[in-house]
Amino acid sequence: MGETVIPLADLRYAAPVPIIPARLVEPTGLLSDRLGRPLRDLRISVTDRCNFRCSYCMPKDVFDRDYVFLPHSSLLSFEEITRLARIFVAHGVEKIRLTGGEPLLRKGLETLVAMLSELRTVHGRPLDLTLTTNGSVLARKARALAAAGLRRITVSLDALDDATFQRMNDVGFPVADVLAGIEAAQSAGLGPIKVNMVVKRGTNDHQIVAMARHFRNSGIVLRFIEYMDVGASNGWRMDEVLPSAQVLERLQAEWPLEPLEATASGETAERWRYVDGGGEVGLISSVTRAFCRDCNRARLSTEGKLFLCLFATSGHDLRALVRQGRSEAEISSALGEIWAGREDRYSELRSAQAADAGSGRRKVEMHYIGG
Ligand code: SAM
Image (cartoon, rainbow, N blue to C red; front, top):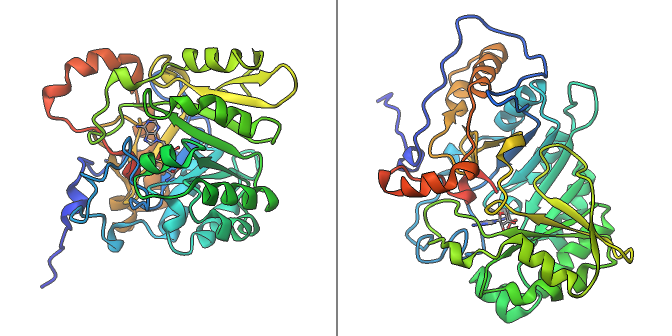
C-alpha cells in the first residue's frame, strides 16, 4: 500500500511542479513579467462542472454523460485556495474573480467568499472580489453571497429570446430565471452588475439590439464578447465571429454612443456610453483587437494549476507545492519566478498559432481554467 493514486483527470493538461528557487525572495507587490506587465488580476476556477452546455464552451457532444470531471479530491479546498490567493495578493493582485465551470455549483461557496474577503491588498485595501455566473441559481444565492462579502457580479446571458437562449445553453434553461437572478443580485447590492453576451454570428447576433434595449437605463453594463477560439472542443470558426466594430455599428444605428476612458489598466472591455445618458456598454474584442499588451491576469484552475494565458497549453502545478507542505516563502518565490518569466501573448500571435494547430498541443478548456 502507500501508493499514490493519480486520477486520470489530473493528467489532463501538462503542468510541471514549479522549481523552488535556491534563494527565497520576499514578495514586494511589484512583480512584473518579461513584457513589463504586473500581476493584478486572479481568476479562480472553483469547479469544472456546469449545468449548461453552451455550444461555444462545453458542447454536449464532448461534455456528455461519459465525460470524466475532476474527482472531489483533486479540487483545491477552500483553505488551499485562500492560502494561494494570499500569496498572489502579496505579489500585487487586487482583484479576484471566482469562476468555473459554474461557480455557484460549488457547495458552500459563500464560505470561500467570506475567507477571501478577509484578504487585503498590499496597500491595505479590500480586494475587488467578484464572480462570473450563468445566473441559473443566483436568485437563491445572491443575498448569502453579498452577506459573505462578495462585492459585485457578472452574469452571462446570450439572448433575451427564449428559443435562441435555450438553443445556446442547450439544456432548455429559460431566460426568465436568469433575469430573476440578476434582479436578486441587484436587490442584494451586488453592483455594478455586468452582463456578458457572447456574440456568435448567425446564432444570436439578431439579439444585440434587443439586449441593449433591455439593459439600457438599468444601471447594468452589457458587454458584448467576441466568440473566442478557447479550448479545443467548440469547433471555432472565424466566420462565426462578429467583430465588435460591427456590434457597435448596429448599436449606433439605434442610439448615438461615445467612447469612455478605461477605468483600470488591463481592462478587457472597451467602454462606450449612450449619449442620451442611458448608461454604458462594453465591447470585448479578444479576437479582432487583442489586448495581450496589458494583460495582468493569472488563472488558477480547479485543481490548482496556474495558467498564464487563457489560451495556454500547459500550466504550473501549484497544488503540488501546497500538498508537499511547502512554506509560504517557497511557494511565493516559485510564483515570482514563474510570473517574471511570462511572455505569453497568444491573441496577438493568433494567426501564427493557427498555422501551428497541427502540432498536437491542446489548448486548455475554459470551464477548467476559468473564464
Ligand atoms: N459559468 C459561468 C458563466 O456562465 O458565466 C462562468 C464560466 S464561463 C466559462 C465565463 C464566461 O466565458 C462566460 O461569460 C461565457 O459566456 C464566456 N465564454 C465561454 N466560452 C467562450 C468563448 N468561446 N468565447 C467567448 N466567451 C466565452
